[in-house]
Length: 441
Image 1 (cartoon, rainbow, N blue to C red):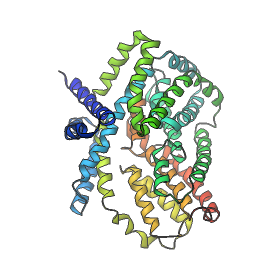
Image 2 (image 1 turned 180 degrees about the vertical axis):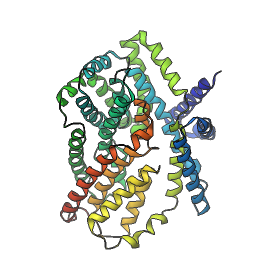
Image 3 (image 1 turned 120 degrees about the vertical axis):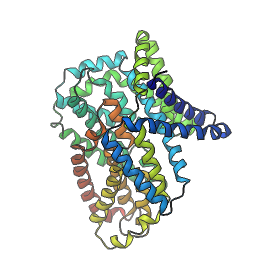
Image 4 (image 1 turned 45 degrees about the horizontal axis):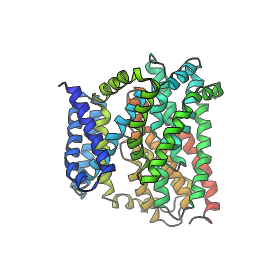
C-alpha cells in the first residue's frame, strides 16, 4: 500500500468516527475516541515534513504558546478537548473535497462554468462574492466547494486566487447575521440581553454594506447581472442540498456542520450517479487522490483548536486587561475589541475563544458599551477573523477548494476589505450606541 493510500484510509477512518458519533454515540464512541485522536496526531506528524516552511513556523509558534500556557496553569485535559473539536473538522474537510470533486462533473455545473468562461474577470469575481454570500447564508464554508468548480480546469493561479478571495469575502459576511452561522448562535447564547431580532436586522444591514464594498473592490460590479445569470443552473441543486442540511439539523438537533457531514456525501454521490453515471469513477478517483495528500491544513487546524482550549481554560488573561480599558470612548473600545478578535484569529486562535474572552472582559466594565453594539462588533470581527486566519476552517476550505496556498489568501487585499468595513461599522455602531442602550443594557 502506498503512503497516499494509507493517508486516505486514515482520513476516511476519521470521517467514519464522526458518523459513529452522530449516529450511534454513547459507549461505542467513547471506546473509539482515543484511537480517533491518535489517528489525528499521526496525520499531523505525517504532514509535518511535507508542509511549507511558513506552516512549520506557525506550528512552532503555536506549540511554544501552548507549552507556556500549560506551564502557567492550563490543565492537560484541554489537549484532548481540543483534539475532539478537531475531529469534526478533520471529517468536514474531506466531505467538502468530495462535494467539490463531484460538483465539477455535474451537467448543471458544466453549464454554469461555460457561462462564467465568457465573463470579464471583474464580473466573474463579483459573481463569486454574491454567490458565496447567498450560498453561504445556509451552508457557510461549504459555499467554497460549491462555487470553485465554476472556474475552468486550466485556470491559472492568479485567476483561482482572485476567485478564492472574492468567495472568502462573500462567506465572511454571513457571520454578521445568518441564523446558521456559529457566530450568531454564540451571540444569542452568550449575550442574552441583546434582542435577537435587532442583532439579525443590524447584521443584515452591515452585511449588505459589505457586499457593496466587496463588489466595488472588483471594479464596481460591471457585468454582475450576467454573473448572477451564470449561477442560475446550479441554483436548484444548491437549494436542495441546503434544504436537506436544514431539515436534518432541525430533525436531529445536530449542528449545521454535522448536518453537512451527514448529508452531503450520499447526496452528492447520488446526484452524480443519476445525472452522469459515467463520471462517477473518475470523480471519486480524483477525490481519493486529493484526500491522500498530507496538507498544511491537517496540521494547523488541530494545533489551533488545542491552543484555543488552553486559552479558554485561563479566563483571567482577558480580565486582567480591564483596568487599561476603563474610561475609553466607545469608538476606541469597539475598534479595540474588533482588532483583538481579528488579530488573534490571524495567529490561529478560534474566534469563539476570543469572543468569549471579550464578552467576559466587557462584563467587568458595565455600561462602557451597549450589549447590542458590542455583540454586533464581535459578529463582524468574527467573520473577518475566519476570513483571514491561516488556521481557520473558512480560509482552509477556500485554499483547498480553489487550490491556492493559504498564505496568499491570508495576507491579501482582504485585509483592506476588513479594515474598510470595520471602520464603517465602528462609526455606525458608535452613533447607534446611545439609541440601542434603551433596548439592551
